Length: 419
Ligand code: FES
Ligand SMILES: [Fe+2]
Image 1: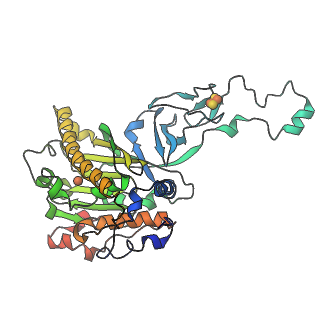
Image 2 (image 1 turned 60 degrees about the vertical axis):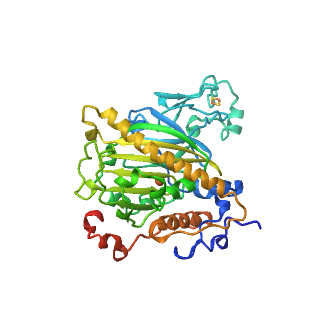
Image 3 (image 1 turned 45 degrees about the vertical axis):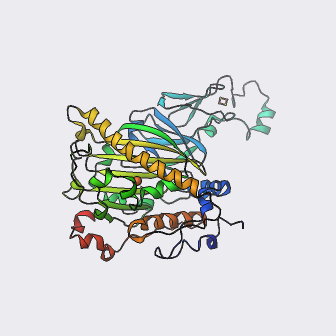
C-alpha cells in the first residue's frame, strides 16, 4: 500500500500516547520518496545547525555546507557579522567557494566576478552593464529597465542566527525566530558559557543509517547497559532524568555523574559559572532536527548530522572546550583522551543504528514500540517530525514540574536545574 507521507492519517499509530504508540512508519527510514519530502518539509523549514562560531572566528573566515541539498556557505564579514549565503555566483551559477578558508573578497573561479564578504557584487570584469556611453539614446530609453546593475546581483542570503557557539540557518524566510524554536533551552543552559567554546577536535563519519536513527539512538537511554559498558560506569541509567521544557528539543540529564578513575572525562577544569548541580551533571540535548549535545561540566561533545540518503548520514563528531578548561599543562592529551572516549561510545552507537537500518528494511515489520521510562524523547521527536511532514508548525510544551517525578523521587533540587 502506498502511503501519503504528508497526511496525518499515515501517522495515526505514532500519534497515540507514548504508552500505546507505535514508532514511525518504517518507510521514514528507507524510502527515497519519504527522504525527498522530508528534505523539503523538515530541513528546508527548520532551524538547522551548520557549525560553530569558532569556525569563523576571524573576519573573512568561511566554511561550506549543505542544507536540504542546497549548497551554502557561512562567513564572518568585514563588519564582524556572521552571514550565510547560497554558494552560487549570480552570473551564470558557478559554485563560488570550494572550501573553508579566509577570504578578503570572494572571486568566482569561472569569469572572476568579485563579491565582498557582505555579499555585495563589486567587480564584473569587461562587463560594463549600464555604462552606455556608446549607445544610442533611443536604445537606452527602450531598454533601461533591463540593463544590468550590480546592486541587483548581490549574493543570495540565507537566514542565520547564532545561539551560544552554534550557527543555525533556516532556508524558509517565513519561519519563526530561532529563539522561539529553542523555547526555554537558552534559559535552562544560561549558566553554561557556550558562546566562548572553542572547537578543539572534529572527525567526520559516514554512517550507513538514516539520520533519524542516529538522533533517536541519542535521545533514549534504554540501550546504555547493552551497548555502552564503559559509559554506564559514569552515567548511570538510574540517574537519568527528563529535563524537558517547551521548545524544539529533547532534553534529559544524568545527575550526579559517577566518578570513575578509568574515565578521562573529568580531567579538564570545569567551565566557569556553573552551579553545584551543573558542576556534577551531564545534560543531553538533541535540538531538532540535527544536533545532539553531550554537555558535561568541562566540555561539550556534539554530533552534527547531515542527511545524505535514506540510509546514509554524514556525521561530524565535534569536541568543544572552554578556554578556562584548557589551562592545564597537558591539555591537548586530555582533549585527545576525551575525544577517544566519546569516539568509542559513538562507534558503539554506529554499529547499533547500522544494524537497525539493516533490520528495518524488512517489509513485514510494521513499526515497533517505545518504553515510556527510557524512550519517551523518541516519541516527542517523532511527533515533531510528523508535525513538519503534515505541515504543522507546532512547538511542543515541556513537562509540568509536578510530572518531573524522577527529580522528586531522588530529592534533587529542581530549582537548581530549572531556571
Ligand atoms: S559564473 Fe561566476 S563569474 Fe561567471
Ligand atoms: Fe549510545
